[in-house]
Structure formats: structure tokens, C-alpha cells
Image 1 (cartoon, helix red, strand yellow):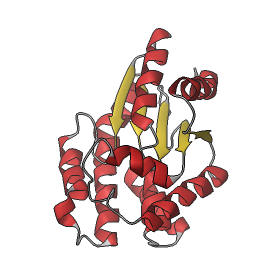
Image 2: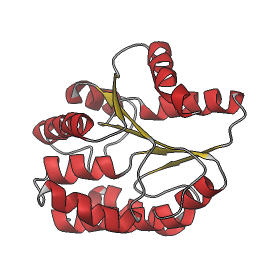
Image 3: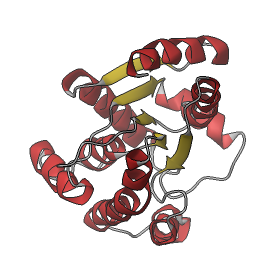
Image 4: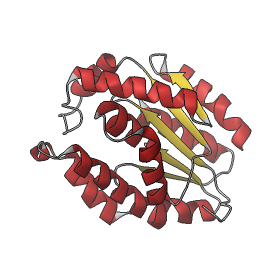
Length: 211
């Protein structure tokens, strides 16, 4: 992005069932107590972004099990391009804190490390074209064993197209996230198998320097 944005862009990454939704809600409460206006969104799709939401349905629908890896990748990027332009950047320009459940880290983890698609530098370059170079101020990676996370979600919801992938795929995704956290700036790893309260406290310690 060529123009300096006023707001803070905070992203949560992690495998299925890592507790992102719960921690995002708690962080929103903490930020609002500090007088900060917060906008919550998620990918694929996005809050107040109907075009991206339609793409989300295509990506999540178990009926689309024959979707090829390249189609999946470019649909994620198409959704993200719309999401960034229509909702994320406008809220950042208003000095809001934007908290997003998944961003390009998930694309790198799932489509590169999980699917084995393209070289990593190539993936990053293509993603940058979709986002206009937008980077999170901070990415929180909630890490836990993939099997434990899948057991959590299987106990409370039906599986979507990505949930139903084999255990080996989800293990590759987890390792991909860890690799990214070691190599990309502004990433912080927090263990997600602690108590909700302890995780919230650890996240807040990482967020406070931003505000």
C-alpha cells in the first residue's frame, strides 16, 4: 500500500479448531475498553462484502470436492482482493482496529504447504498483487496439534470441504504455519491448548505495544 493507513490491522491464524473465534471476541472487548473502534471480519469472504461471501460459499461447499488446487488458490485471492478493497482498507483509513480471522498466511499454509502448490516466493508475489501489498501490523498464530483441533470442531459442527481433508494435510498446514511464523515479520506464536483466560492474557501482552 502506498498510502499510510491510520488503523491497526491484526490477523489471527491457525489450524481448524484452534480457538481463533473465541480469542478474537475477547480481544475486541479489550480494545473497546481502551476506546478503540473495532471492525471484525474473516476470510474467505468478509464482513459487509457480499462478493467475497459468494466466493466463500464456493470454497467451503462440500459438493465442490473436485475443485482443483489452482482453482481453490485463485478463488481465495479473488475473495481477498475484494475484501481488502471494499472493507479492510476503508476501515483502516478511519483509524479503526481491523481484526481478521485468517489472511494470506492461511493461503500460504493451506495452498503451498498443504497442497504443494507453486514455489513460496511465487505465492507471496501473487498474493501481494491481490492485496495491494497490505501487511498486518501483527499476526497471532494460535498453534496446537492438528488432531486436537479437528476433534474440537467435529464435536460441534458438520465438516466443510477443507475440514474433511485427511489428517496428513492438516499436519502439513500446521507445520507450514510454524515455518511462516519463523520467517515472516510481525508474527507471534501462542500455544492454543492453554486456558481461554491465559491465552487472552498472552495475546493482550502482544497487542499492547501496538496501541
